[in-house]
Structures are given as C-alpha cells and as structure tokens.
Length: 277
Image (cartoon, rainbow, N blue to C red):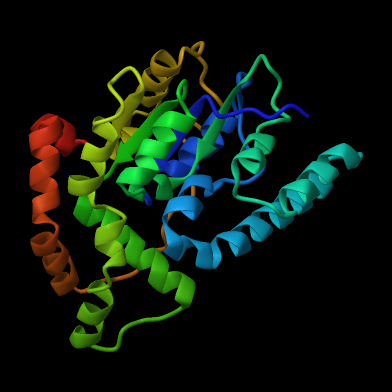
C-alpha cells in the first residue's frame, strides 16, 4: 500500500458535531474516512498529556472497526483485517504510520481525518502541521464556549457515572481546566489563522449543523472542491449527550469564566456568526 496524507482535516472543536462530520462525510462516495474516528497523530506528538490514553484509544478504535467489519460483511476481508492489525503495531504515531492509515483510499476519493484535539496544538504543533500537510484543507467547527463546556461536563459525568452531591462539589467539578482548554478559542484560533488563510481553513458555526445541515454540506463541498451530495445521515443526531440536570450556578460560573472567549469570537467573526454557534 502506498501511503497518503489527508486531503481534509477537521480539527475541532470537541462537542461541536465532529462525530456528525465524520459520519456524513464517510457516507459520501467521493470521501474516504479511516476505520476509526480521531487518529490523534499530531496531538500525540505535541501534547504529552494525550500520550497517556492515545494508545488505548487506538486499540479500542481498531477493535471496534474489526467487530463492525465482521458483523456487517458477509465475507471477511482478510486483507482489510491485516491492515487493521498493521495500524496497531509499533512504531505508531509517526509519519509513516499516519500515511499508512489513508493508504487504502482509492485515488479517486479524497481522504479525511477528524480529530478534535488538533485544535489544541501548541504553536510548534500548528507549525509542524503547516509544513507536513502543505496541500491539505482544514475545517474548524465553532460552538458557543459556554454551551460547549456544559455539554462536555455532562458527557464527562455521564461516562464516569458520577453526580456531585452539593453545590460545592459541582463547582469543584466545573473548575477543572479541561473545560477551558478544549474551548480556548482566544489562544487557539490565532495560531491557525497565522498559518492558513480562508482558502485552506474553513470556520463553521455549530448551530448551522442542527438547523440547516445541507447548507453546511454545500459550504464544505465548495471549500473542498467536492460535487454536491446529500449523504446518508445528514439530518441525524450523532452522539447526543444524555440529559443531565446541572445547577444554574455551574452555568453562571462558565458564563463568567468564558466571557473573554465569547468576546474574542465576536471580535474575530462578528455577532451574526457567533449567534449561530
């Protein structure tokens, strides 16, 4: 297999419809996606804290891909299974491994990497991306900072099956810097803006995905030089966060803490764009 680099990369943000993006783009007949969402190549290299769990996430993604293949295919494709095995063999998370991920894509199809953690890369990480992916285009889905943090909070607590017992405990949970980190647009966006213009980097407001997904697809198609399609799942809700009642004081805490993020987004994109996030 001849390695390839992705033609399109969705860099985030977390809890901003990136799973939807992976699903609907993978349903197109002109776009090839990896067998698992979130490759973590660049953040593994430049975000040391991610190395604690990235290998486990890779193993889990490969396991699910194999199970999905065995369930959905009448005949097992041994070549495909060997490809999955090869992705789980060291050395991984290097350039050769990254290009091998996209090696099975037909040349007539574009390739896509959807990894929300990429938006959090430090300056040297974004610089490396700019040099390593010289012809790639990027999509960054922007969600309102407070709503994004609230969704992440609900997801984290649901996954841990944990509920704070009182207001003090709720505020302690909300104080975790991870909620600020994943939506730190004020620091992240300028790093990408400095290296990519609007021919290479497309910003999309999260709210448009739910209200008018076809318009989102038209923008992506025009940006990535794709033909017009309405793929399966365009109107689907993917990975909806389970309902969880969160005290108002938590939202108030986020509103105060993340106010600079909203102010920056308004300054960068304008009030009309921000209203759609």
